Length: 146
Image 1 (cartoon, rainbow, N blue to C red):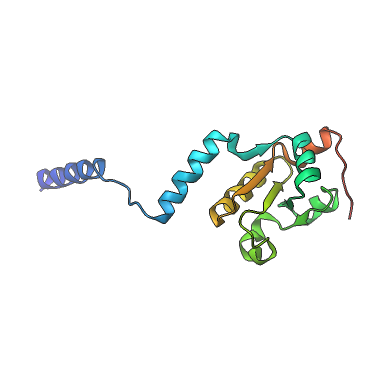
Image 2: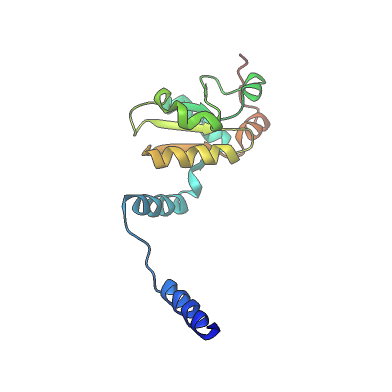
């Protein structure tokens, strides 16, 4: 009995080693995203460059922090949609998937999650502020209060 079980386990391990991932729209989208992100520094933008991007392009500015963080100061023109609520508030985002986006949070982590989610939704022109609002403040850039 042990021998049969051992042979079965060995067979399953060997079969798994030769398994190929299914190719579907999801896996193709993930592969395209990984390829793009690996060549674009994960679509990060420095605070000074983000300020210029805002001035020149007028992107949709998405703040994915909490309300209390937003109330303590935010980028002028930003729309607050906390990361935890983003999935349920997609209707508030631009319908144009090519619209320029600037995403930020406090230090860049939630902004990266927001960027990734927007890319999977099909948005093509999304950037995350490297270092978030902390880096924005450290650069001495303007901060709006509610």
